[in-house]
Length: 201
Ligand SMILES: N[C@@H](CCC(=O)N[C@@H](CS)C(=O)NCC(=O)O)C(=O)O
Image 1: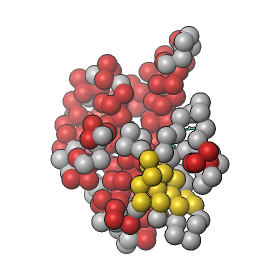
Image 2 (image 1 turned 90 degrees about the vertical axis):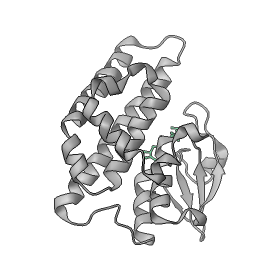
Image 3 (image 1 turned 180 degrees about the vertical axis):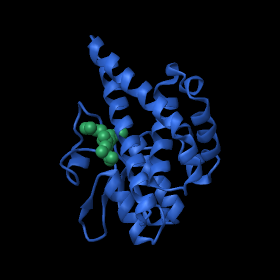
C-alpha cells in the first residue's frame, strides 16, 4: 500500500501511530508528499482530488481518505482493537477522535491565517477562544481518558496536543491544563507515539 505521507502532518501521524500499534508499518510504502492549502499538489490529487494527506492507495489501485477512514481500515484489516465495538466505549472513542480532529482543523486554519500578510484579527481571536475552551474541556475529561483503553480517541487527542507543541509553542498549553499535560506526558512514553513525534523529522 502507498501512503501519501509527511512527518509533519498530525493527520498522517494518526495513521502512522495506528500502523505501529497494529504492526503493519512494513506494509506501507511512504511517499513524501507536500500538501499545502494554497498550492494543490497534482501528485496527491491523482489519488485524492481534495489534495490532502493522508491518502492511502491500496494494492488494487483503489484509494482511501481521510485519516479517519484509513485508521479504521487498517484497524479492521489487521484485526486491531483501536476502534472499540461496545457501545459503552465506542461513542466516547469516536467523540474524542472528532474532538481531536476538530481541534486540529481549527489550529491549521489558525496557522494559515496568522501567516497571511494581514491576518484577520477576529478570526485569529475566534480560533484562540475555541482552542482554549477545548483545552479547558479536555482538562475536565482527563480522568475519563486515563480510565479508558488506549484507542483512536486517545491517538487523535495526542496528535492535536503534539501539534500545539510543534506549531503553537507560545500558547504554553501545559501551564493552563496541568492534568491534561500529565496525561499527555504519560501517553507520550508509548513507543508508537514517541517514534512518530514531529521532532523526529
Ligand atoms: N480531515 C482530513 C484532514 C487532512 C488535512 O487537512 N491534511 C493537511 C495536511 S496536515 C492537508 O493535506 N492540507 C492540504 C490542503 O488542505 O489542501 C484528515 O483527517 O485526513
